[in-house]
Image (spheres, rainbow, N blue to C red):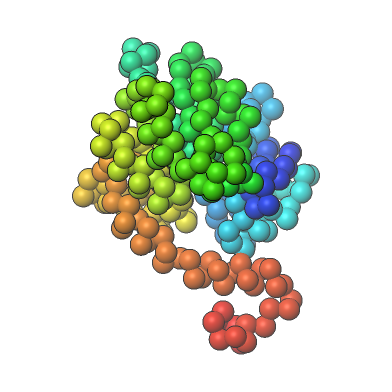
Length: 295
């Protein structure tokens, strides 16, 4: 069993937890992910590693309540134990594999959208701890869903915050913010790591391709099983079939077929919605509407 050491609610629907998992904490790297299982018969939930504490033996995860299993996880408290916590899985960030000479030549900009702040943070933190500079764009629809701002500010040279509705920071999306930073502030970059909603990554990659900035994206949003068995995270990268959980989760964003990936992602939306409704309504859920598969 894996004990919940700390639980913090970041927004109405986003939670942070520190999980006691010494072996994962010892070997995990930025860019990798874990699979959590709430109960013995629970669903497998792939979640990116947000932080690691080797001394305490804890792994930090951040998740948004989008379905029954994440709602169930959010209802758990400090001291409760998860049935399963598997990892580290996937490949580490390509930045970690680069030589010192390569990293010194990099002018890195991280783009974090929404919950994408969680997987961006450990990579920016790693850069900071090893003496390399980076900037971060942190974007969200509105101020109330901005997360990890203080943590990111401590590990980057410049943090640029933007919201679609202008409720906090620069008014505009992450693409608008990137153009503002380059055109108005005269900044230049040759390496971008962009993590967030699929649609955001798609349009960010279209822009960075025009700007000639190599861009890495994380396709963790399309995972279901997390081990390459279910095929849910099947995606075309440069015309070749890849599986985000075992071949990634990071890929060259300019080679990813985002439209195909988003189409595959929608396949599971209906069933997840039904499961969420069953969880929320509990014993009162009768299924008699004809749309939930109930009797």
